Amino acid sequence: MTEPAPSEKKTDADEEPQPTLLEQMGGVSGLIYSSVPVIVFVLANAFFGLTAAIWTSVGSAVAITVLRVVRKEPLQPAISGFFGVAIAAFIAYRTGSAKGFFLFGIYASLVYCGVFVLSVVVRWPIAGVVWNVLNGTGQAWRKDKPSRYGYDIATLALALVFAARFVVQRWLYQEDYTGWLAFAKIAMGYPLYALGLLVVVWAVRRSDKRLKALAETEPKPETDAEIEARLRQKYAAPEA
Image (cartoon, rainbow, N blue to C red; front, side, top):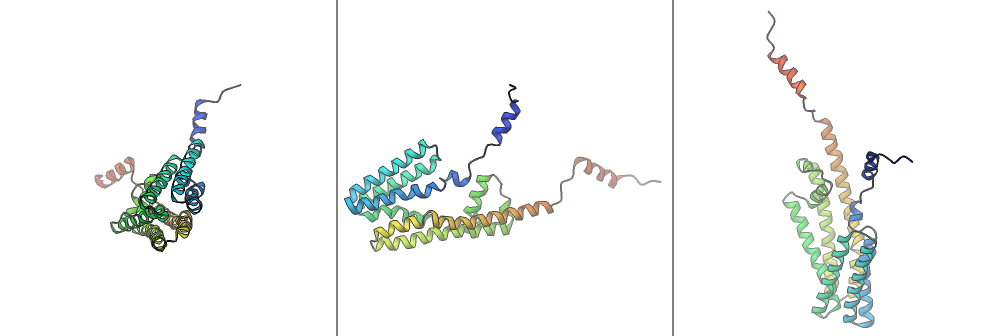
């Protein structure tokens, strides 16, 4: 049999689908993985006490990390998820309270909200910066005010998500509603974040459409031959 040409092999490799941004962030399974340690912590705390809850939540996080590595899933979400659970468990241990498990996430939401709002104030909206850096589309969106305003709205929508998390979960924390804290952490995690991402998708499509239209209306640069012909016509000697 005739072996395929090297060029054909290269083409097949080039056509292999690249992982999407959602897949790189952990995919839909990330919702399940992020919920398991929280559920394990609350159940273990209710039946066996705080110490057991701390160790079982960390153990579940380790198991999930190993599972994701074995399944060759994106490593970054697995590692960040493990350290997030480890920090939350450490705070619960130091405070001696089950609700301390949620303290890190509560104030992390406040910090994220502040950073997102600040990025809009300094005219570098994070939604636009991150999206265009990941996709290598340059800084053209910043030169187009409507595009930048769209990313401002998307960034503020994400900031609102983090603000809502902080306000609701901090109130539940102060009222000692540990069970409801767990529910709020899960419900206001991926599901609420997905709503913010819908605004980001709107901003991206709006900006791409505008930039494409602007590129089509811009005059095409002259070729060397066209420049030479124009200069010859301009400086040509008048006939006698």
